[in-house]
Each structure stands twice: as C-alpha cells, then as structure tokens.
Image (tube, rainbow, N blue to C red):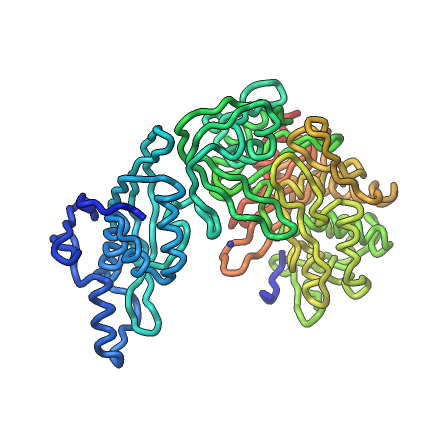
Length: 556
C-alpha cells in the first residue's frame, strides 16, 4: 500500500550444575565456585547496590552480569531451591508459582540444566529431566532461553520472568501438567482416508492438536497419560488454543476423524512454504467451503487459520463490492487515481506515487491504486465497510466453526483517517489466509460458503451463513476486475497460463517497526481458491503470488 502516517518444590540434590559445559559446584553457604563464573552472583550484586544506594548501576549489562544472573537462577532451580531461584527474577511471585508447578503438577524430576553461550542479554540453556507419574517414567529434553534485565531502582541484574523460560512453548497463563490426557488421541485422516501426521506434513501440528481437542472425546478413543501444556482460558470472543502434548508416558487408544484436506495439495503446500520464512497459505473449494490445504513456514502458531494481520490491498475485493453496491464505482467507467488523496488529516499515496489519468476503475483495481479507494471515503458512512464484510462475506462475527480454532477476521467500525485506511486493508482490519481465501471464493461464486476442515455432518454443527448476497451486477463487475488483474494487472506474472476462468488480487501491508511490508495474494482458478501471506515479503505478486499460483496449478 502507499505511504501513510503510522497511526503478541523440588527436592534438594547435591548434583553439580553444568554451566557452559563446565562444572559449577555448590560450596559453603550455597555460593557458586569454579572457573565457569566470573563476577559475583546476582545476590552479591544486590548487596553491593543496597550498600551504596547512590551508586546505582545503569546502562547495558556487562557479560559478567549476564552470566552471573543466569547462573544464579539456573543453579538454584536445578538444586530445588525454588525460593532462591524466584528471587533472582523480576517477578518473584509468578516465578515461584511456575517453578513449584514444574515439579508438583508436571511431575518433572532430576532436572539438569546446561547454560549455552550468551548473546547479549539472552542466554540459551538446555534442560534434561525425567517425567514420572503412576509408576511410569519417560525422559524429557528441550532447549529454552532466558533474558537478563537491570532492575531500575537499584541496577541489579535479574532474569526477566516469562513462562517461556520454563518451556519455550508456554505462553503466560499456560500450565505444564502430567496426568491422564484431557482428550484421547485422534487419528486424523485426509479426504482419501490416509493418515495425517506431522512426519509427512510438518505444518499440521497445531491442526492435529485442535482436532484432538475437539473430537478426541467423541472419536471413540481412550486417553493415555501425558505431559502436556494446558492452555489458558481464551479471551472473550476468541477460540482456545489447543493443548499440546510434550511427552507420552502411556499411549491411549486413538479415535478417528476425517478431514477435507487433499494429500496432494497439502504436500504441495508444505513444499511451497518451506521455500521462504514466515509464509502461510490456505487452499479451499469455493463451491462448498472445503479446506484442501493449510501450511505455514513456522510449525508452531497456525497463521493460516488463526493469524490476525492487516491484509493490505487484497481487502480491496471487499471495498470494491461496497463501491459497486453504492454506485460509487463501475468497472468500465472513468475513476480518479491521483498521486495523492487526503482524508482525516492523513495523506495517502500510491506505490512510487504513480497516477492513472482518465483511467477506468478496472485499471485502478488492476494496478492496485490506493487513491482510487481513499478518494471515496468522504462519500461513505463509518460502518459501511463493516456491514458489507459481515453481511456478504461473513467476516468478523466470531461464528465460524471450521473444526479447529480459527479467527474469523475483523473489520471494525472506524472513523476519520483509520476508516479511510481500512478501505485499503490497513487501519484496524485484520485477516489471515483462510479469511482471504474465503473472500476471493465469495467473489468468484457470489455466495459465502463458510470454510471448514471437518464436515459439519460429523458433529452436526451449523456453519455460519451470510445474511445476504451481492447483486448480480456487483458480482459481474467484481469478477471482471479480478479477472483483469490476473490477466493484465499486478497478479499477471504469478497467474500466467492459468486463465481464462481465473481472478486474483495482490496486496502489501505496512507493519509498524517492520522495514518491508507483508506480501499478500488471493486468487481463484476454476473451483479452487486460495490466499497466502509472506510476512516481510514485500510485493504480494512476487512473494505470496508464486506460492498460491503453484497450488492452483497443482490442483487443476
């Protein structure tokens, strides 16, 4: 998009602590001795600072301070002195509760910690231990990291407490628990009956967790005993992130659930997102809403279904629907596309300040002219875009039920400059690839079909419905501008050879404190539609475009 003003008790042991590959023994009074530690401990620094309150250390932490603070925390934790470990953090109460739960609730024993090489104030470390419950035991090993900060009032170096220090997959509010699993394991199948595993499809970890949480108790299985992350209760209006299994002590009997995923397209999607970092893509069938593939470069958080990102110019599909309905634009009529357009005190511009003199709206759409949309803001009510997004595209109502947790998009009512920015997919508008795959599917068919991963017939749930459809005139014009963009506009390079039954829209979305914008692409080919985003990818036609187009080709 154009430039604008920028308006996530442990029993004591005498076992030595391994710090950076060197043994650090505990001497008299619990002090660390040995050549692996330089400088005093965090407790020593605190005493010195207190003794002379006028001489408060400030500025960046020294290497010695970082090593000492990290060593003090790791040593106390390993030796079961949880009070002392918590006292070396900047949140004693939260650290005490979490560290106590590590042994009491997670049943992790025999913890051995090995400090890695610090990088600035960040200190990596490895964890080894044993999970023991009900007479069964399994080894546990993982890597984590901590960050050392300076306390403002006295300059003492302390470990910044975050739940992720305990385990990297923990978010604040989550808990580690060992016991009978909350839900039996699930055997997820693709649309052809083949089993879906993370070994074959690495992106599906979060999806499989979600399927287990929703269908484990109804799929016919029995629960096992596991160490798992129990996620915090979700905020109002959002769906809970699925619990995650870390270690299985005894296997349960899996139930079965069938999904709509295509093994061919899922494999292709995995290959495509693996070519770049921070890429996500979703492919679906416009005529039914069936999701055929979802993949993310990062195999943790599922951006494809749960991401909340500004969609940039791909949102112009929804905005064009609004303009056609209000007769503020017509595909083949002349429409303004100046270099600049000002609204609400913000000055908007096009990429490289281009303009189209006496061009049609179709030409402006295909070139992704921002000012062609911003110039119409003064003729719109603040809630116009929100209404069209909800009523025609089914967005932002928090009522989608796809079979696993998802985010249904957000198009909030805004005013002044943010309202204008929302017309080009900025402001408060937030989407993910599934949302935009649904948008381009609705543009193709003229009717909203809620995306779904598991057939509603499996659990008799009712899919979300749109309250109305777009007019036949609006639908015809919308398809026309999307087809023209795919044939001769910013999407033409990526969509080459896929016509004539095709349409596409590119997008780029500015993100605060990010040098390059996120690149977006939404397109259809026949009865196949998809959308993708590459974070910090730049122009969507060059980054996300080839990913989506490759999948449309593979499914043709």
